[in-house]
Amino acid sequence: MAQQRVSGRVIDRNGSPQARCVVEFFSNQNPAPVYRVTANEGGQFYLDNPRPGPYTVWVRHGARQQQVSVSINQQGLQPSTIVVNW
Image (cartoon, rainbow, N blue to C red; front, top):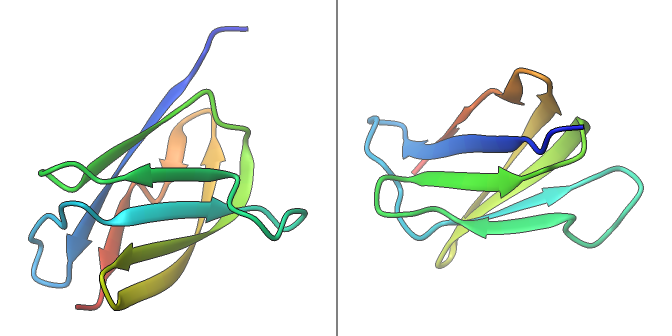
């Protein structure tokens, strides 16, 4: 099976990229983050060979944080753009 690289992006409600946000993926079976990545200057982040399924994602930047639900499947991260409310 080929390795899959999944990409995503964090933007604010005005569409501006959110650099240096910590993006943590939690599965229903594990209370600790399964994946933890940091968004680059363009708000983009990447996961190498992630497991498919639903995830709860916490996006954190300083004191700001937001939770969203996503899934990973053969098409990648759904939704691939995470919009934070700050």
